[in-house]
Image (cartoon, rainbow, N blue to C red; front, side, top):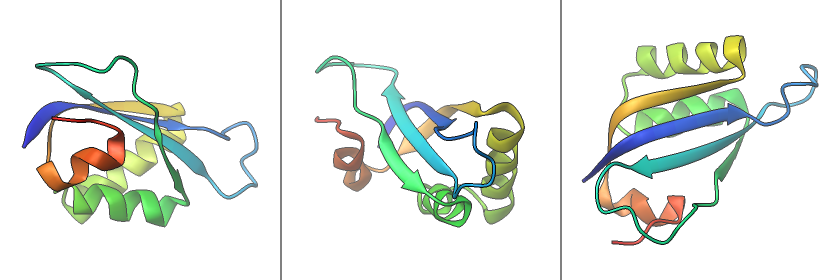
Length: 94
């Protein structure tokens, strides 16, 4: 497990009629290396919610994060514990 913050940005928020596209960036707190990380794209609110559930959030919390992204165009979730098997999806290396 790697601790850090998960930043979610609504990439196409200027077109609210389009299928939502999000960019997720995981920023580890300790032993940061390899420079800037490429964001992981997610398409659709249901896919974002599912991704958050897979990261260990409850369905209710995941739904609240998606709602907050839609209200604010982005959100930063602190103190996220990223499972080791998910690390490569975020361009991170141990």
